[in-house]
Length: 121
Image (cartoon, rainbow, N blue to C red):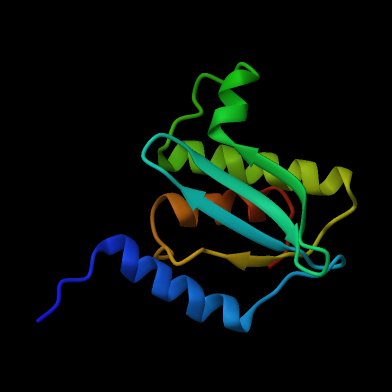
């Protein structure tokens, strides 16, 4: 029996997900990445392969938001920030890419924060 690490299992799930979804200029892909210290989110147009807007707990902390940590509350702050930045670019609808992570905890908090701030997906 072979032992598969959590990261290898996540990457397999990521490949399965990415076969099915891709972002466009009208409806970009909202990608979430989670590390031990920070949560990152970005809107990606997969046609040219460019990032339209990005937000993270790291940038929020640099901008003076002390509550921006890698927690559910921090995830919700990142979701609200990415929705605000998307609104500035006139983006209202996105496709959510959980990037192989389970839709639970911090990942769900990013999605809930983005929805609460007005993004549709």
